[in-house]
Length: 124
Image 1 (cartoon, rainbow, N blue to C red):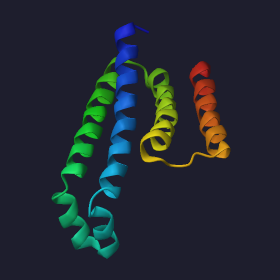
Image 2: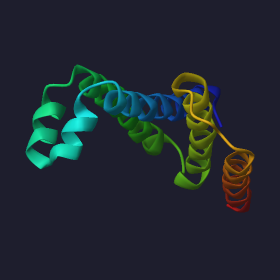
Image 3: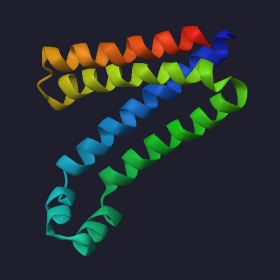
């Protein structure tokens, strides 16, 4: 695999994890969480007016565009197992930036997902 393609795959996966983390922050750090609990219309209004949410969506959107470029350049069976890195990075971000407790069971489960993806990738 060309080094540039590998770098792009990893960048897309990392940006996806950052986007997911930012979406969580957007929900937790704004009035969006309360609006969602209040019903559909308050949720839509809060979502439209939330700069946190729009920023998170832009980050996540960029990751999708990068991923589309990756898919245009690499076999899906080669690129997709790298998505498993997103599980690890997202878990690390959740613990490090959001202060979430990550139990040993979650760590082992996440590593099993990564191992399964690696097995699938090697079988292609």
